[in-house]
Image (spheres, rainbow, N blue to C red):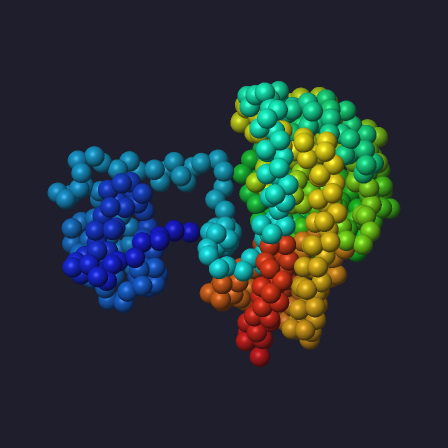
Amino acid sequence: MLDINWRPDRNSPYRLNIQIVNFIKDKIATGEWPVGFKLPSQRTLSEIFCVNRSTVVSALEELAAEGLISGNAGGGTKVINNTWTLMSINHSHNWLPYISSGLHQTNQNIMQQINQAEFQPDIIRMGSCEPSPELIPNKMIQGVLKKLSKSMASLGYEEPKGNIHLRREVCTYLKTIGIEADPSSVLITSGVLQALQLISLGLLHTNSVVYVEKPSYLYSLRTFQSFGMQPSGIKLDEEGIEIKELVDRHRRRKGAMLFTIPTFQNPTGSVMSLERRKTLVDACDRERLPIIEDDVYRELWFDEQPPQPIKAFDNNGLVLYIGGISKNLSPGLRIGWIVGSEKVIERLADIKMQTDYGTSSLSQNVTTELFSSGLYYQHNDIMRKNVKIRRDVALEALKKYFTGIGTWNIPRGGYFIWLKLNEGISMYQLFTKALSRKILVHPGDLYEFHSDQYLRISYSYASLNEIDYGIKTLSELVAEQIF
C-alpha cells in the first residue's frame, strides 16, 4: 500500500501538474521509486493529490515525454529511466529484485491498509486487539520508572533467557494459574509474536505442517508461511478444537506442531472447556504432537476465571506455553515469555541472542517491579472491570442495531465479538466504505477464507461512544448492501 502524504500547493506560482511532475521526479531521483516501479492508476493519483484527473494525465504525459515513465494497456505505468539532465549524476539503485526475493512474505493488501489506517487521526478502531490508551496504567508505570531511576545499577544486556528476577516473578505468577515452572525453563521475549518467530526459526523446518484453529488470527499473519511452514486448519466447536479431526489429519499428514489459543480465542472469543483441554493433552501426547499454547488474553476474564492452561495438565514437556503483558497491561513494554522444557528454552534463547541480543533491560526491570510489588495483579482487577463495561456497551449496540441482520457470541472475556451476518455481502466493500467513514473493522476472511460472512468486532480500543457509533454505522452499511 503506497503511503503518500504530499499534496500540491494551490497557492504556489507553479501549476499543479508541474508540481506533481517535480514530486515524482524527486521520488525517482532518491530511489524511492526505482526503475520498474509501478505507479498507482490515474484515478488513484488524482484522489491522493486531490486534483482533477486531467491534471494527473498532463503530469504523466510530461514525464513520459522526458522518457522517465511508460504506460501500456494492462501493464500500468512504470518507471523506465532514472537519468535525465535535471537529475543528480547519482543513479538510483534498483531494489525491486531484492524486495521481491526477500524471505519474509508481504502482508496481504488489506492488512497493509489496516496497519496504516490504525495510525490515522480520528479513526475509530473496531478491529484492534490492544488496549486503549485510557486502559494503560501510565501513572503506575511512571511511578515504577521513578522508583527504578534511583535504584537501577545498569541498563546493560541481560542474560540470554532474560532477567533472572523477572523469570522468577513469572514463575510465581504461573503458579497462580496451575503451572509449575523453574526460571531455567522460562525465556523472556519481546512480545508473543517474537515467541512464534523464535519457535519457527529454532524448532521447525521448511514445509513443516502446523495445525491451527479454523478460524485463527495466524491466517492474517505471515509468521509461519514466511519461514516456509504450511498452516493446516482444524475446525472449532463450542468446546474448542475438534480433536478427532486433528488426530485423523495428523495421522495422514504427520504435522510438526499444533498452535492453539484456548482462552478467549482470537478471533471468535471462545473458551476451550476444561475437559477438552485435558483430552487434547492426552491425544497429542499419544500422537507425539507438540502444542504451542498462546494464552495472552487469559487475565481478561469477566465473571469467572477460565479453566487452567493446557500447560497445567502437561506432564511430559509437550506444551510450549506463551504469555505476556501486551494485551492486559501495556503493548509498548514488549514483554512476553515462553515456558517449556529446559533444552528447548536453551535452544530458543540461543536463537534470540542471534537475532536481537535480548529484550529491553529497561522493560524487563519495569515488569519485574510491577510483578514483585503486586501492582500487576491490582491492575488486572481494574482492567477486567473496565473491559467488561466496553463489552456490555458493544453487546447493547449489537442488540439495538444488528438484530435481524446478524448473530453474535457473548464473550466471557478477551476483546472480541465474532459477528455473523445473516446474508452474504461483499466484505471488502464493507471494509472500504467503513474506512471512508473513519471506522476500521476486520473482515472475517482475514482469519479463514470461509469466514466471509463474519466480522471481528473489538471493543478494546474505541471509546464507549465510538463503540456505539461504530456499530450503528456498520449496521447501516450492511443494510445498504442487503436491501
